[in-house]
Length: 138
Image (cartoon, rainbow, N blue to C red; front, side, top):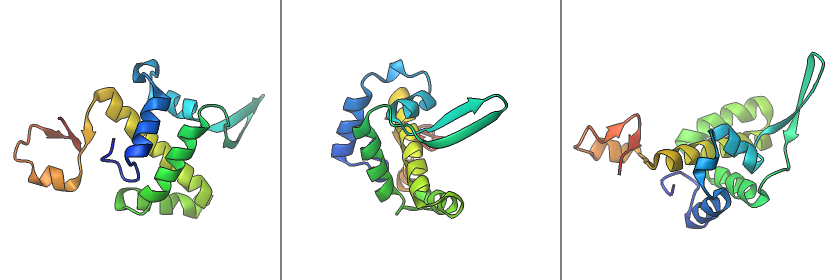
């Protein structure tokens, strides 16, 4: 988890303690909902309204991920996504979108028990069987 941009030791420890057992979440969407990083939806008849993010879930996890997203948007993988989203929706909504993207990456890392590979690790790895789809197998 420390291989993600913006996630340090304190954030990783907080995320693991707040999530608990990863097996209780069937998908990354359920984890994002538990963290409160999804928008609320109100449906009436044929009309649906999406509003601000929900306030249910762990506020500590939500705050830590938004703070990690603040640091992650300074790096190339997340910078272009942030800039594109901020241009359309605004800076605050774009930071929450990056936080959601970080949490989805954390979910897949914990679920598959694999670390994310960086470009340097992939190019320096001599064992091509270990690097697949940008994920390094420990």
